[in-house]
Amino acid sequence: MNVASNLSESVSEASVDVTAKAGTKVGAKTGIAFLGCGYVADFYQQTYANHKDSLTLHGIWDHDAARLEKFAAFYKLEHYASFEEMLADPEVEIIVNLTNPHAHYATSKRILEAGKHVYSEKPLAMEIDQARELVALAEEKGLQIVSAPSSVLGPAAQRLWQAVRERELGTPRLVYAEIDDGMIHKMGYAGWLSSSGTPWPAKDEFYTGCTLEHAGYMLTWLVAMFGPVTEVLSMASLCIPDKGGDTPEDYTTADFSCALLRFEAGVTARLTNSIIAPHDHRLRIFCDGGELCAHEVWNFHTHVDAYPLPQNKIQRGMEKYLHMRSKRKLAVAKNPETKFAEGGHPMDFVRGVADMAAALRAGRPARLGGAFSLHITEVTLAIQYPEIYGTPYVPQSRPAPIEPV
Ligand SMILES: NC(=O)c1ccc[n+]([C@@H]2O[C@H](COP(=O)([O-])OP(=O)(O)OC[C@H]3O[C@@H](n4cnc5c(N)ncnc54)[C@H](O)[C@@H]3O)[C@@H](O)[C@H]2O)c1
Image 1 (cartoon, rainbow, N blue to C red):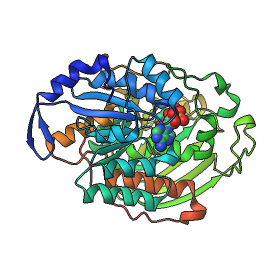
Image 2 (image 1 turned 135 degrees about the horizontal axis):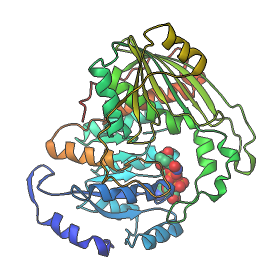
Image 3 (image 1 turned 30 degrees about the vertical axis):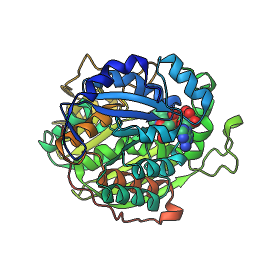
């Protein structure tokens, strides 16, 4: 194996650690490797810097030789000679699957079969049976599998969740959650390059669909706060079939979906995804005493505000006619040291991997692992494909409550 020369110090640190019991290294950093060196891999490589005290990156692999060489050269990393070599590396405990969504099932399955834990970019798989199989396989082998996104572990999500838990504006009743991204196909994305020079994979994004790509950013927060989704009513459609030169062949994937979700805690939500309506990533929770709002769920440090209900006629008039409301800023515990990826969204992509590593070392399930990730995948698939899953749809997966950070 060609272990990165600039990682050799961390490698030797890891190798002197004591192994306590069945694969648990005490005092060691957790060994990870990246599978896939495309656009998002740069975000992971750059935010890995936030977690070097607990993780050691041992190597990378991509089946596209040019991508692999370019990424390795840019970050001065050496790389494995094959996927098999990565799977056989005894220093690696978690493989971070950064391949395209359609490759997730087959690659994650091979990783689990090789006895490694998986942290997968979303979705876990493109079909619910495949996702169930992966989670069952992991369980059978005593391994863990976790799916991104992990933004619910970030300080803004945690602050919003605290406000909900502590009923800062009373009982939550209704949620409006939007992931509208504007007309991506008219945004000149041809110029979007990752730091190491990989173009944004437009065709694959259009083909996979904005719901499978993005709904998890809202669902993870909502399931953490309100428990499992008990019913999904969805409408999804392809509103703009011609997306220009990168329109996939036989393109039928929805570029808009709107779902009504019922949560176990009794809250009802409307979740919209589109690559049509102008940018809006707000999560608004309407409570008996007013509105809680996280303004941009793709920002770990986004503003979280509380808008108490207007108390009198003048305040109601100001809200109705002048769109002015009284507001209380909720303090988000921003860590000024946190590094975000260059040109990427202000998200700490490796946060979820670090949480998984901490869980492995503590001998507990990762917060977002197994049933939680399966549930997010199941609900997302039901929203994107109502014609396949049926609507209303009753999810079968039921994750246990997760602990706040
Ligand atoms: N593009 C973004 O802004 C973004 C943001 C967050 C998450 N994601 C997620 O990250 C994942 C990857 O997206 P991307 O934008 O990096 O795509 P990409 O096409 O730029 O990169 C994917 C890479 O995986 C490699 N790959 C595919 N199958 C493989 C296999 N079997 N073995 C080895 N390598 C393989 C490809 O060669 C490619 O280099 C997706 O799940 C996507 O949803 C993307």
